[in-house]
Length: 266
Image (cartoon, one colour):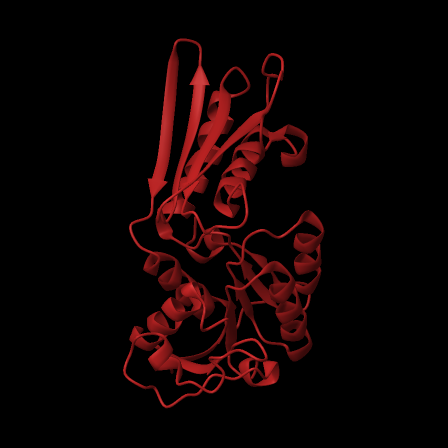
């Protein structure tokens, strides 16, 4: 039986790709396509917006219609994603979000909602990136403190948050591998006279430009040697396909906050 999926932000860059991915999946069906109230795309066929033949399903700004699906996917903005997650918790609808830029407090709020419904929260839903997360945690645990960790990321010039959610996720994986709290060791930027690097820190460097979809490199720098592992995204469809996989996986799960590593069995 096909999984009925509701999509928030269906007229956004990622939303259109998710609609397309749902339409092209063999065991999924688009149940509702949401847009924000007052959007010029309200009432437009969701297939047309996604560059597909018409699907016979007009976009809606009614949250209950979207949450009447078996599961909802959200790639919007932090405040909107939290509001949608809260409504999903009230409705008992599994919720999948790849929205980035959530604050620590917003992540805590999402975790609280996950006590009532299954929530899959993953700043990056590609298979390759989630394998990278697992590798980074293992390498960090194996190498230990004598090795410095730096994370370098680059995205297109329209991205609004920095470092990227994926970069932060990689930093969290490294900190987890070392048994540290991410907040205690993360250095999200550097400027001016910073002094020597503090042992155990996890540093970040952010680049923005052009139409780069997403590139991430984790550098482990040790005495007289260096290890670099990374990932380059060749198309946003990898995130959309991952979101559909996560949505299908979430249906029927117990309440809880899950990641793509759970979905992929990593």
